Amino acid sequence: MPSSAARRLAEKDSRTHLLSTFPPRLRRILEASSEKGSSSWLTALPLTSHGFALLKGDFRDALCLRFGWQPSSLPLVCICGKPFTVEHALSCSCGGYPSIRHNELRDITATLLTEVSNNVGIEPVLQKLSGEHTTQKTSISSDDARLDIVAENFWGHNRQKTYFDVRVFNPFCATLSKVPLPQCYRRAELEKKRAYEQRIREIEFGSFSPLVFSTTGGLGSTATVVFKRLASLIADKQPYSKTLFWLRCKATTSLRNIN
Image 1 (cartoon, one colour):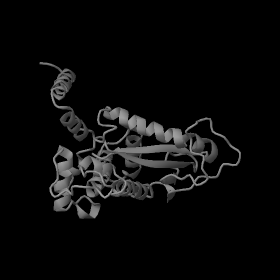
Image 2: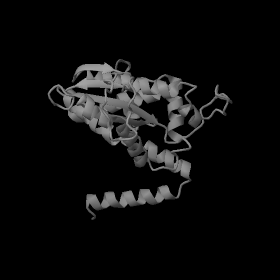
Image 3: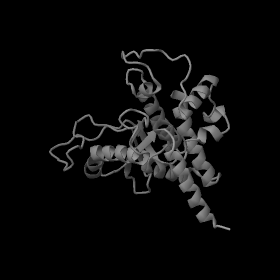
Image 4: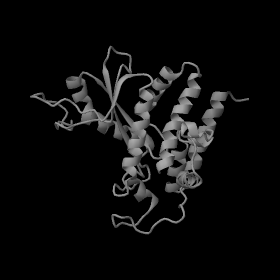
């Protein structure tokens, strides 16, 4: 009888082979839907008090997005003038969806941080540069530069501020549909770090944690570490695993509510 490790390896190889036989779009849908945490909203109890309840139309549309089906009664043309598709709606700034889902995740994360950190704020403005220079060419140097969230003592340092910035990307848009999902997360995190990390570290004397999500509910590596840290700080009466699952449900359900 094969060991459990050998069995898992065989199952992984079989899954990889099976995925390779599917059309590219179906393969992308299955990969995004099987990411860790992306199914939390489906297995959670629909508790209104926790924000896990979806209206009938929201639940139907969420299933359509998950399985790549076309929702019913879609308009033909977007207000920007381009043909209206699901992929276009998730990325078009004219429709407002990118801003709504970004702000929803920002506000949820800030609310959770208030339970474990001090002096949590939304959209903190960075100090103006007065002769300082950063070696990173892509670093933001404008006087009105701001991030999404700031919190003190999140990582346990003596009143050190941690800055967070949220990004949500659509893995099905034309520019990313052929890029492997792990690379999408790494690229988005790197862009954020190149823009803000050096300035925060050397001018603000703080730390920076980019929070990258996909529209299907996946989390980047840094966001995963941040949510695990949140779970460990919040988990006093409930087990850590249940707290982490609850946090993932909060994030993924917010994306389902506004997609």
